[in-house]
Length: 441
Image (tube, rainbow, N blue to C red):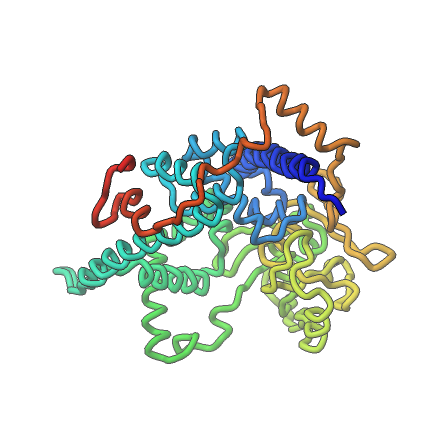
């Protein structure tokens, strides 16, 4: 069988040219992703641009996060962004280079991308990061040496604490303080922001909350438990809400936390989705005359069945495993606490369904149907984008109209086959290398 080498070369050139077109289109795609993320276009029930991309475009969540990362990195690297837009640099090379490139090192790393293969680029980036790790190790050792915590008693008896912690230790402390604040005040940051106007002047400031949280951490540590010695009831969320308001959020009535802070009726409905209930009847003067405890918590056996069925948050594109039970028809409206009337939602999307106008119901076929606040459906799997009959030709015509002249040699590396000396390359390129040399040496 005679091999037609000319035909094979033509096929190879077509592959290379189309790849350059795809890289140029990828540059446009990354620019759109960067703008979309900056304008929070994904904030329609999704927690991040990557999650929206995973839902809308069908990307793996890891690949979606990488696209968002590269998109933002290119915003500060105009030379690399331009090279990708002209099809001169592949997305694979750009993805690797943006892990280490800065505006100061962009030009020299761009030269590496143009001259070397994708394998060369990956090896140089690994070497570059190795030098960075050595520099980071020296910086970490310096930070460790200057760590300190000073505690002394002031003239008025108040204890003053001042210190410097290593970043990772500080992150743990801040997370612990955040958890302790939530334990003490039972509000998320968003709730604080929503209720910032009109709350009692007795509401503690953030600095006061931090002080209270630190006290709780100390008590918890000394008691070797999650509670500083008091009963568990002390840290439950207590909401006072009128039955009429709970059944219909548009009805007037009380809806407030134990400390008197007003919350919306929908917030009360969300908190009551899976909660114990104490019913109190009052006389005309407002005095309680009858108290009865009932439960609306989801029983353990039912919760196990719910977890087994839903396997995480059911909001389209989510799937987070840390969830709360949601009554599709609220029990205050007569909805039963049964498997068919329940769905798992994460904290973010449980709030979206109650307070942000999203709606969910179960169809006759048993599938959940979600709707946006404007009534439009939010499908589990979005419809595919319309593709022209000749997508390759459409892409080429679009680039021709933009003045891009792409061919089989556009993205070809300048490598001539010589052996790559990674150590020498890093010495030449990296600003922190021990023996920097001129690039042209």
